[in-house]
Image (cartoon, helix red, strand yellow):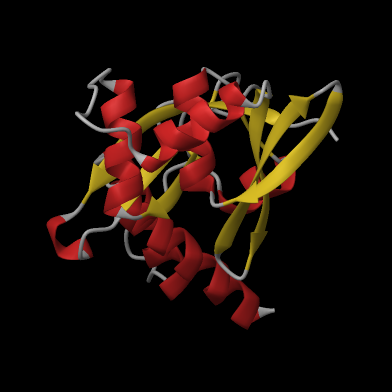
Length: 193
């Protein structure tokens, strides 16, 4: 299976989120973003490495990197390969003694390791299709630059209202809210079918 390479666009938080962060991944050759809700510890681990800040003692992800190195294993990449009931799943793929292997991991832990070993991050197309959010500032090839104007007197359905809120959350780069709205839209669509 071909995977889609992504890069870390950023980490965002909302004061009302109770300590949760959104890890925002973006397609390298595309315009979709994938927000994944992660905990504050994992967000801190990713942010420290991105900013090249060395803590006084090794963090858990530093320990994992050092363990791979001491065993002579090389991390090839990390893949976010599944989305099940709103939960993302990932694999750390590595090579050890000439054999390829993989470990199941939470996406936040896999990404925290990837930034430490400079490994690429990939997402399964089905995951990005299901949970990705298209950047509003970029237009896909063949799409009109502007949506046709709708009459303002037309009442909005609940789905249209949610989609409007999603567009606004993306414009404001509130990816945690965008992820929640994406899930609400998906639930609403499944209820309509």
